[in-house]
Image (cartoon, rainbow over all chains, first blue to last red; front, side, top):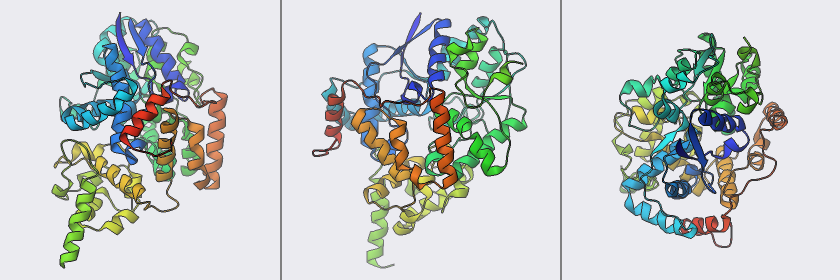
Length: 290
Length: 192
């Protein structure tokens, strides 16, 4: 059984508890063990970079150093956490002076950063390491006839520059392949890598609501019954602010937003409750019951 | 151009540059004003100046106009501009640098939510090692219009009923070590 160091991030403790539950359940069923990092701290998301860059790198370096101790590859289910881990490691490797400074601070917690981790987003672990074929072979309840819009969002794809081609940056396909593997029908829609607004939902409400509206509109126009996400921030923006969008723009959206792990879990025959399904504000039941 | 204004131009560009640690540099002075960033930005319509304009303004030393604008507080960190820039400028990182600059100088408009939200977020992490959503709410909710205020309360209530809001603030175990670690990066006197 392959084991990974798992950095859940703050959202998965409560706000995205269904993502956490379904990540643990599905990986177990697929023969992978997620070992939660010991005493991890908040990565600071994007807001920490508004205050101090050095401290932002230090916060993430602490988690990386804890992960290094396990000797395992590390996965993060949140796109913001993933981006911070991925780029903190690459920046510190390129800048030994910065790394030395941060290691001096990490000594206070008995930690050292060396920068040789393999860091993946959870969605990548599913599609690259486990693979669509393997997942397909374990599907018992295919989600036949369910039209699902895969929503990549931003920080899984950007700003990294290690993509095979411009095509895989601008029009990736691996989320679609995963949805096909679990028997669903992936919906092709133009805004799949467009931003949900992130923390602008707090700081610049009107701008963020229009971004959410555009995304929902784009998916619904292509007849998606459901949107699949891979990030707690995206999930919350698209789901919890749908009513606000409807009020602001006079629209009528009622699109359930589930985590990809919840959908994979259903296809693997795991009971809904164990996957945290039922905690969403826009119920997925009418779509899934068909 | 007088000698004084030349110095000023040079200084603001340099000041902003010096706020960017990123190892391989951020060549924003090399901007060719192609506008790919503004065309790619999903928030440009809501900004006082587009990203392309802001870069030109920083390079021209228009410090006051730059700092009085909402542009960098409206950046959503989606990095669409950054991956498409033909000059390899990390425009998102430049926006972060301007945010840091405006917080350090306390140069932002009262009704801006971004700066106070970021500060509240950072302080929570420094105290406990973790975020805690309910403690962040006062940093923005009172700046909302009435309708937004009630929408936020309604959302929070529904999330709580679904068991999706934390009731107690989480904290890391090795908090003392954590705080000492932070003090080795930012000396904070008796605070924290």
